[in-house]
Amino acid sequence: MSSPTHAKTAASRSSDDAQTPVLLTPGPLATSARVKEAMLRDWGSRDPAFVDLSHTVFERIRALAGGTDAAHVCVPLQGSGTFAVEAMLTTFVGAGERVLLLVNGAYGHRMADICRKSGRAVEIYEVAETDVHDADEITRRLRADPKIGFVAMVHCETTSGLLNPLEDIASCVRAEGRWLLVDSMSGFGALPVDMSGLELAAIAASSNKCLQGVPGLGFVVCRKDLLEAARGRSPSVVLDLQAQAEALANGGQWRFTPPTHVIAALDAALAELEAEGGPPARLARYSRNLDTLLSGMADLGFYPALDPARQAPVIASFVEPHERWFAFPAFYEALRARGFAIYAGKMTGRGTFRVGVIGAIDPATIEAFLLAAGEVVSEMKQKVIS
Image 1 (cartoon, one colour):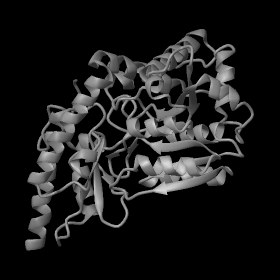
Image 2 (cartoon, helix red, strand yellow):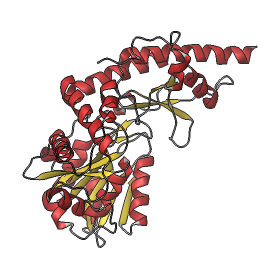
Image 3 (spheres, helix red, strand yellow):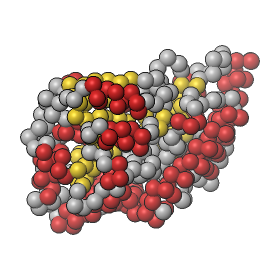
C-alpha cells in the first residue's frame, strides 16, 4: 500500500503537509491519489454510464456484506452514515413495535435519540463504555417483552474503539426469533460481517470509513423480504429505504440528486480493496497499524482506555495524563502543525483522546506520527520545567 505520506518522517514534513494533515481519525480519513483522481470527472445522474456504475458499486457492497442477490439488496442514501442509521431504524421498526437498543457509547445513544424523535418505542440496555453486553441478559429482556421486534447495536463503538461481539449477539437474537439491525459504520470493509450466516435484518455503513472512500454516501444492506414488509412504514420522504430501493430497481434512477463524484470515488476505493486482498487483508494492515501505535504510545507514557481484548483495529482511545505538562488542545495543535490530525475523546467520566489507524496509511505512517508525538511530548514537558 503506497501513500505520499508513508516515507516521510515528522522532521521531513513541510509546511504544505501541515495544511493537508494525515487524518488519524475514524473518518473522514486519509484517501489515496487514485480515489481523489476518480472525482475529477463529472457524471450526469441519468447517464446510462452512471446508472451502470452505481449498480455495480452497490452490488459489490452487497457481496462484501455477505448478502445474496436473491435475498438481499444494498440501498444507498445521500448523506453521512447517520442518515443511513436513521433510515434503517425508522424504515424497519414499525410504529407499534419496540426496539431493544444495546448502548455502550455515544453512537448507541444517537440511535436512541433517533428512535425517540421518530416516535419509535425503545428499551435501552446500557453498559459502561468499556464493557460489552451480556447475551443472557439480552435473552432475558427479549423473553420478557414480546413487543420487541428488533434489536439494534453498534458493531465498533468509535466513542472508545470498542469492538462489540456481533456474532454472539446475533446468535441470541436469532434464537429468540427477533431481527438484528447493525450500525457497522466504523467496521464495514475490514471487520468480518456475514449477513447470510448471521441472519441479520440490515447493516448500515458509509463510503468514508474502512472502505476508504470519501464522505457523502451512506447505505443499508438489508433483507428484501423485510424491506418489502416495511412498505409505507417510514415517516420520512428522503429516508424511506423501501421507496429508494423500489425507485432504483425500476430503471436505476435515484429519487433525488445522487452524490455522483462520491460514488465514482467509492468505485475506485472498492477496486483498491479488492486489489489489497479484500477485508481480511485490510483488517491485517489495520491490526499492524494498531499494534505499532499501542507499542509506541506506551513508550511515550500513554495508555489505552480499553482492555486489549475489546479493542477494535479502527481507533484507539488513550487516557490523558494527569500531569501539569499535558493539555489536549496544545497537544492537538502541536501535532497538527507537524502534519497529523487526531480526535478529541468522547468517553464520559475521564479525559481521553483518540488516534485512528484506518485509511490509506500503514505502519510507516504510524511510526512517523509517533516520532512527531515524541517531539511534542518533549517540548510540552520542557515548557513546564522552564
